[in-house]
Image (cartoon, rainbow, N blue to C red; front, top):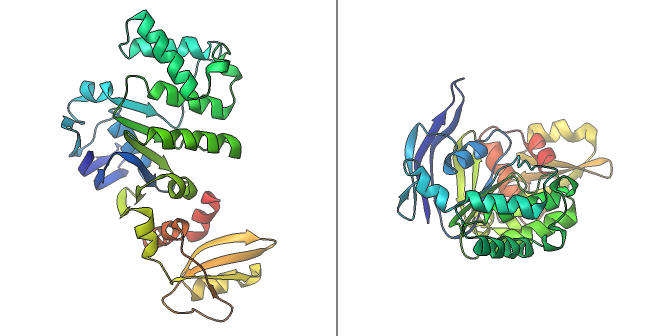
Length: 300
């Protein structure tokens, strides 16, 4: 269990990136949703011991994360949003180097660990290839391989599927799902579908604060029978946004599909649709002043 209590962080330029964040994160996949600039990466870097918090407490199974950084790093696996590689070094050689840094000194043990991780991430057959020749998805899987060194109890992945093609994205998400059966895995993303498919618990963060937390099914149930859909011409969009609680818009064959939240049928032409986590996400952002149209465009 990872426990976060009243975590806050303000940068030197005055931007308050985290505001009194509190979360309980159990073993398994935990999704952290939020738009760009919400504070997700600040929270991830703080948990990964890469920056200091101004206030608050974080505990991982008895380890004080903010003060016992060396102890945290022994049980931490981290895949940042920007994961650089040495392009002229092979995957096997690079992972062996990371294993040495992780403290695996015995040559035989290290060789076995490296080979096992390359097989687990489906990279063993290309272990001799230079990392510079890897596709984006292969680099991300290599990033997970290095994050798994040392049998971590906490794994943090920050925007891991951004830029991946559908096949690589599915392969990567399947790998994360397997890993999440035994350890705490925090998936920080703005892609709602990733959280819907993988995570048993989740939270939405916006403007540095936790706005909603729970199981995806539970938070979706909170919008049951309240989401309505209508397809309108572009010229009518502004009028509908002024008249209804529009939470998202999406272009559909030259017209605009609206999703509106209302306890009753909001008007002529609206049809009820099942609520989804995307609707919960947009509704939550709209409640704190985030633009619905921009959010929809980003998630799309």
